[in-house]
Length: 297
Image (cartoon, rainbow, N blue to C red):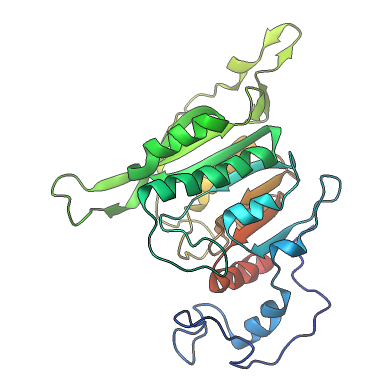
């Protein structure tokens, strides 16, 4: 089992023409360094294997793993209804809408409706027992709670210690050192820590059967420092955080989706833990890095 990035397309020889992108968004940060961690050999290997949403062509009966150059909403819209077990999403605060679109920062109202659109697709693609974990900073936490309540059954808000203390230039009081994770399910019946919640077995409701000593929604033992085996890349969350989510709300061979994949941190841990992974990333440089990292995991 694994994500196969190779396809019948021939490996290309490196050339600037082959890698040309829109003005203002060069692939190379310097002429001798295509992207941190990517070599010319990597580009020759992974560029021909880039897939887009039109390459997905999945049905619930015929699913396959893959990483796609697409924004989160577009990617989710290409997935079959009720086909996914778990979504782990860390939405960007200034999203680019569509692989060919560029523009300024969204207004708060536009950002609200952008989030609503991909969450609506998330609800559609989740199985009836599926779950979503939405990672966010405190500024938008209330908005996400309201949006999730429109579609899902919100189970709890998890708070963890974000080591990157952030302080707005306009803030003269407390610097923020915490971040939130909203845990929501499609219905009241779902699996948690390998036990059914909301189901009735022999006349007993199993809602209370998942209690475990020491389990709370304050993950004080996790901070935003990379202590695991994953090389720290932009957008990666601590390995222990993602692993805890995977273990609590999925099984081996379950389908896991990251709509805003960045450099593939979630995909690496999904692969290592035996889950089947689908990821979407709108930035080609990050997608190539994710392809390499997950391929080598």
